[in-house]
Image (cartoon, rainbow, N blue to C red; front, side, top):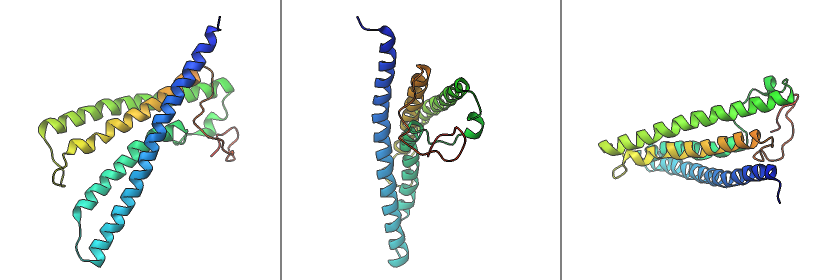
Length: 189
């Protein structure tokens, strides 16, 4: 018979792996979005300054792509523990205090992401209901607003997976091997 205590950590690791896959996909989409945005801005500059034919739709699309980049990459950034942290303070805590601070931090991110998810869904529903359109013909604003709950869901999943893993007494696998950046007890970059 298997040890039931080993099932919980295994389940936590499976959850973490599934969320990591989703977050990495989001990070990949964010990277592609950034490249497309860069290409569009270069084309816009060429049309505007070399051909004398500004294309205002590109400015709108580029702004949406920046939102997409941020929302798609937020989950992967959380998973890799690359959001801003105050490690100078937490590094001075005892080991149990550091773990509690990390759980509290991840839970705070999860709560914020949950609020963003609920409000994002409400925003999509509202803009879809009243039929708001963008300045680009044929693109309803709710398409753009959909980026908010998508990114919030990725961020929520990453933060909840971290809470579960940390609560099981395990170390999240998100941060790849990094070298310390000089802060005593601090995470590495």
